[in-house]
Image (cartoon, rainbow, N blue to C red; front, side, top):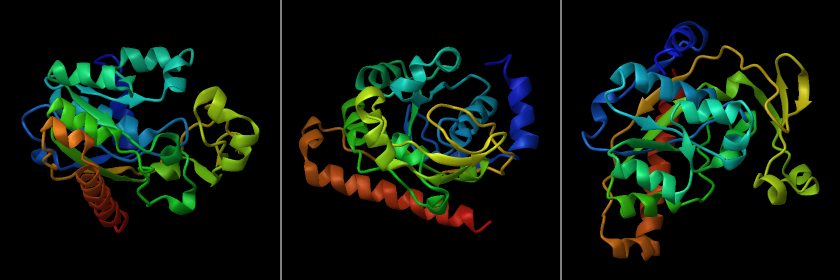
Length: 248
């Protein structure tokens, strides 16, 4: 990562004009960060968070990003991710990272979140996926919500392409529910079945929010009411943070 920071310093400071606040809210112990991301396949708001983390801690505290299986399997991109410490978003990989005392950031909404239309740019999409709460209980770590804005302006998603994804059997083939129609550089209006655009220089703002304590009693894993309560609390906190950032 050290070798990449020359490039990332430029991208953070000048291309995306990144602002990340709330570092003082992070617990001292390993934590699970939960947020939203955007930009279809190239989620610059996720990448800038990880780069800002590395720059802030200078490698003293390790944060693992997580990615969809399809991205991890892509030639070139998958290799880059692995070299940067990105891990698959599954129980085994995330659990091992916490056992090693590392932090992990998860974007539960997956492609439904990252490929949401531009008109929903400031809407939190976790897609009802609550496995991250059970993982936090299992690993005994707090959850730290993260709000971000600006990522949707790096590429404009005109249509999420849910029906087209069904026709193309993307769910069966790639575990993907979306086939977004984008307006981006350099190809203009394009059906983006794989990464094709160069992200535009949008300003990205990120705020690390107050942590949410999670009961590590194993019985809570199957406590549907408890899991639902925590899910709604986290979703609400992120939305409040996004609303605040969107006004800047």
